[in-house]
Image (cartoon, rainbow over all chains, first blue to last red):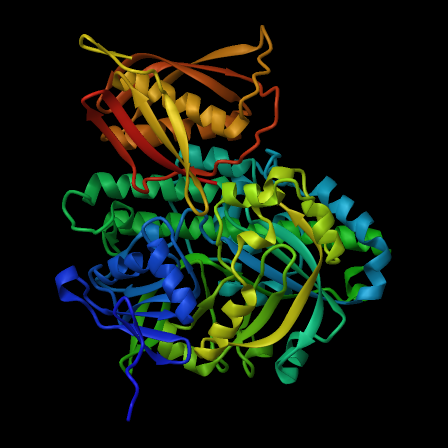
Amino acid sequence: MVADRVQIRGFTEIGNGRWFRRRDRRRGMRVDAEVFASAAVLRQAVDDGSIDQVFNVACLPGIRYRSLAMPDIHYGYGFCIGGVAAFDAVGGIVLPGGVGYDINCGVRALVTGLRLEDIKSRINQIGNGLLGRIPTGLSRRGLVSPGKRDFETILRRGARGAVELFGGREADLDYMESAGMLPVPDSLPVSDRALGRGMGQLGSLGAGNHFIEIQVVDEVMDNAAARVFGLEPGRVTLMIHTGSRGFGHQVATDAIDRFRRRFLKRIQVPDPQLVYASIDSREGQWYLSLLHAASNFAWANRQILMEAVIRLLEESLGAGRDHLGIHLLYDQAHNIAKFEEHLVDGSPARLLVHRKGATRAFPPGHADLPARYRAVGQPVLVPGSMGTASYIMRGVRSTEARSFASAAHGAGRRLSRNQSRRNMKGRDVLRELHDRGVHVFSHSLRGLMEEAPEAYKDVNETVDITAAAGLAAPVARLRPLLVLKG
Amino acid sequence: MTVGKYNFPVKKFEFFETTADTGMILWGGSPADLFTNAVKALNKLIFGDISLAREGERLCLPCRVRGHDRESLMVNLLTEVLCLQEIRDLEVMELKTFRVHKNLIQGEWIARKPARMPIVVVKSITYHHLRVKRTLRGWNARVVVDL
């Protein structure tokens, strides 16, 4: 006798960590929905309204396969965080709400040849150095001050432009999604506001959940992949989490404003934040060129910050980067729409894949991966909250068919900022984290209270679901040693 | 606030929570009041309550903001406040309106070089569940800001 399958809001579990709901035509859904989650995570998503956002995305014209959500799903603007949706590259649509405001917010991970004991006695020196040098949320100027011409180079050439103008290694470009640069047309229609906000902020971390973290490899789960990635227990690693700053936010604001003006009365969307344009339209092409420019800004931003952090480590430890064994593991985007080839129902299709709070996770053998990673798959970086573990995972073959090669991007927020502050009232967040062995540096105590570990979901659960659902496989767990909070 | 012969309590704005961000509920007897209160609310959100105004450092700057409807006018107005903060390093304290149409605000920003650090970094003014509407009691708006 087969037991009745559990159903949550019409979703049925179809495999480990995979919940499926057939399209509801009365609701206007054009495709089915699938959420990668545990029953508890799915219930939370129902409660916070993000499941309705998954259904709304399923109503958009030209959507292919399914409206998807990753295990770190939570409520966003129109399109849930952790949402993935793909549209035909020809005749399909592009929606700024499916990318988000912080365009190409992403994570860059570095591996070093250092061991914990090499930096343990210098943690405070390094932390204070970062705090003094890296512009965070409350400071207004970035590390570099490009003129208009150099700034345009950054918008056109991304991380490559940053290497050419401000230093770095060309070889690192191979270890970034799209080599840190997406194409932009000759005439780039950037608004004065975007230009003004972006020029002053290049080489800055920003605020909120942005951070620079020094970690140590705590446990290796996949020895073969870890060897390829250069990870072993006790090895020091580093993560930088930031995006396109005010430039990307202004681009998104400009795009939603223009799309609303041009299309909102002519199209039917369940939420105005999901306003879209045809990819082939003038507005669609205009937005894509700005999206690419903002993505290039974000890659350049992380590149400039990485070089500053490496210089600081070199000075603090009195040795060059080669001697310290520092190399870029990978740089991946969280908020982006990119043209990619995928199999849909067994047939190859060129699609515009929107990932909002989700990462690309290419499987082994994918032609777009650097040669070094082709045998094991793309490194998938899953940062935890301040004070909890982060993970390095890798893309696996099953992710291609299930999620357009996408995986979770982090822990996902659980408490509102005010709730988190109330939670932390009377508690010494710095002391509590210090007692856990995490040295936190920040200009904003309020920001620290808002970003306390309890404000986020359990990253271990996100990683377990991601692995169980066949989206990515864990390679190593990282323990934080030092955090610079934006 | 006076609407016709009726007097209503003068509540100008209040904040509400969302999981990751913050929202503002705004009131005004007229569109001009509503937009003026929106600027005040954003200033309070970014810089907090404490007033450290230093005499002699105030600047008056011309304000001319367009939108294609009242919602986009609200977003563009508040985005201009963020731009003045980020690009020109100014704290916008107030907006004095001269003309408010459905798609245009003309007036004057009252700003200063910030005498205090922001307590919150506002990154975007969003269209998420944005509402600007006329009610029996005047004008009312709901704006969610991305932090």
